[in-house]
Length: 255
View 1 (cartoon, rainbow, N blue to C red):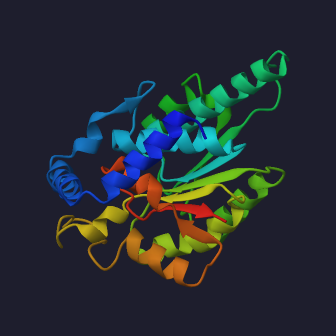
View 2 (view 1 turned 90 degrees about the horizontal axis):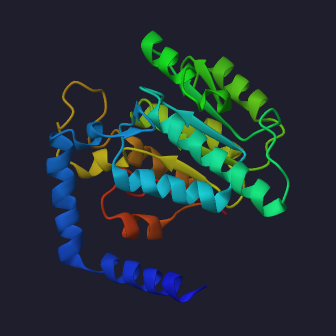
């Protein structure tokens, strides 16, 4: 570990113990969610409904774990798929440079698999027209439907390093079913990232038009999953680093 990394880890640890900083971060999360702050961003031209801090965390995880397949549930406008695909393209390029071998544009490449119960036609068209489209596959259907789960497993065959991102229906039942279905695909040392666990930490009724709320959300699903699965742990250092995140307790590392 170099000096910069040591300093960063020490600073992150101090931030985790700084009650004033933690309180300020929680306050910002509350007001920014009401202001729909996460709807303001895009990645390489496609809307990505995420907080910038979580976008940075995802690129750090991709660079660190170097997956050859990323599975994402929840597609929306496709910005997250484009983020993952662009990072995988950088990995392929950098590894080619490191090896001294030319990158074959027609050769096998790292891929992203997105699943959504409703891929809107205009979003599919825009994703398929994007320069990163050749790295992206999409499946339409419920992420917990047996036929969709079976298809994901079929497409995951032969991939050694897999990272999973869950960001679709946010009810306890649905997220727990996703965790049971897809967590086994996560390779050792890689991650299953569960977004919107922050719902549990917000006042009840913040999402009156949605079926999830305090007591019924991704964080409650993660708690139940971890209670009966000892091969995943919460990476608390990520949350301490970000401070601002919609996934507190949701960065799960497979050990």
